Image 1 (cartoon, rainbow, N blue to C red):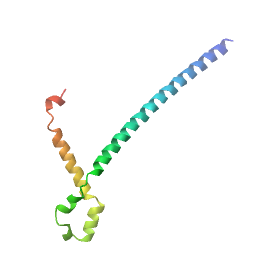
Image 2: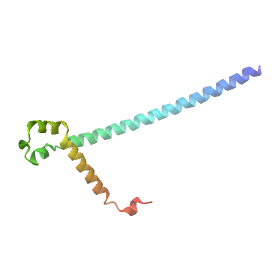
Image 3: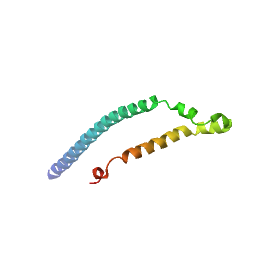
Image 4: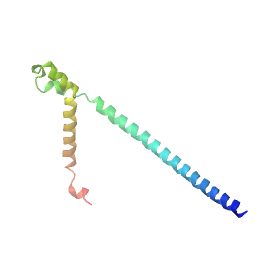
Length: 108
């Protein structure tokens, strides 16, 4: 008789723990889905802003590209050199902008 009570208590306790694990997993799943929704909207917005900026005129305005052989132009276009230069210049701009923040605000 006492073994049945002990078995019932241990089974009930494990079912209770499993239930709370299930509830916690559900709450975390919902939080991650909501975070994913907001991040997806945010990154879609950023992507649409970045793609709306037309920088194709930069590759034609700097330098005389007709002097280069066609193979070199093809390799440069396949390597996305203009995009690489844009990313590097953007990183430099962000770095210079962040240098404007006084050190007294960033040191705790």
